[in-house]
Length: 279
Image 1: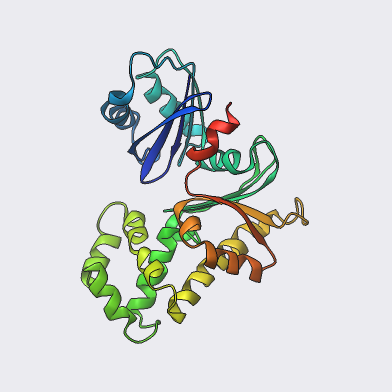
Image 2 (image 1 turned 60 degrees about the vertical axis):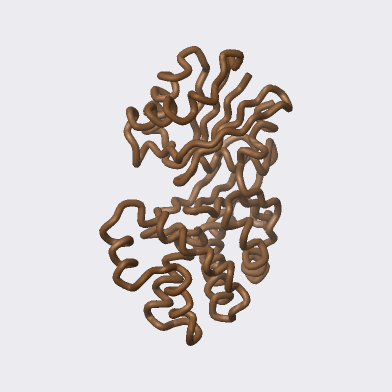
């Protein structure tokens, strides 16, 4: 029996996999850059452990997560060992998990568009090249946090169609002061900004919102996907994982096609297909 995890900034999805018989469990997000080994272990014991029954004998754990760089691998492994000491544990990045989910054992270009963003060229087994996403302040183009940041900035700077700013503040129950407070003085501003992006989905037909979305996704391709052209310039299909890619499929496709790319498979969560890679 295998335990497979896909962890983002907001939540972690766990798949208890026994061939094609799968059970999905959710816990809060795990990120070793934001949480200590003890904090991660507390999440596992408090939120995952109650769902593990005596007949679940895990031989392998495959954990794919945000922040799971080489220097942070042991932090996550040690936390998992505190709950499952007998299992063989593999820890990889959420980007690798997304690539294995959408491409399987075939090479391809893969993007993640969720709360944050990332991309890579995947050779069918491992990530061959990765443009650093740089986080929501310096990068994360096309992500929920990036869209929320653009939306707030454009609203407060009166860059959108007349009346959109007032509608935005009314629907979100925010003010300019509370937004500044949450972005600059409270923890997890990327999550707050991402939480504002659904406003764009509700008003996607409004021309200035549509233009904002197209520009956000074009920036994702220009500042990230373009970098993989020299590996295989004929490969123009990009596969995606993440809620933002799923929600804004039409706008993402329009932005891709304007730059000569095609959008391939889109899945909301890599956990839906990762078990296929590890069968």
